[in-house]
Length: 156
Ligand SMILES: [Fe+2]
Image (cartoon, rainbow, N blue to C red; front, top):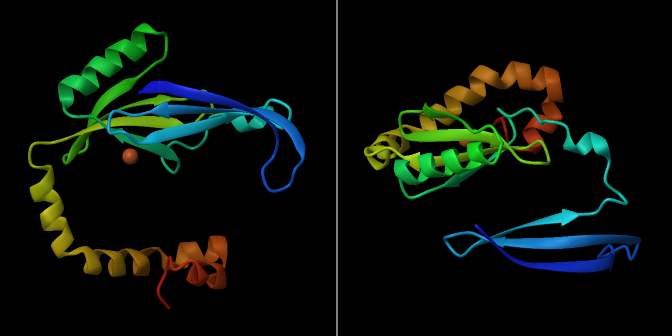
């Protein structure tokens, strides 16, 4: 990932509210970009607390395990704890937190990744139906049946 640019902007698009911020762009190896906003005027310190990592994290794929381990070593040498690797069967991953408290996963495919996914795809519909049925009650209790159904999380 490489820093490609940073733009200082004075107002919020759409509302015109004055809130100077920096929009900073990073280019990833595959040519795609990821961008962040640094808006200290409107930022709330609570936003930077660690988020529940299991539910909220970003995963970035690298070419192979050697590249992933290289990144882990580099990150650890910069004083950021990058844990792992964790072997998930179809991928291996390392994990760390970004300055926003969001967990970042760097992952590489296992040699049999595509075969595992091909097998899983064959039972995808069945697995989704089974999961929806299995979790319907707890979702309904937590979110309300109407909300769950509107979001398409559970088929009626
Ligand atoms: Fe993940």
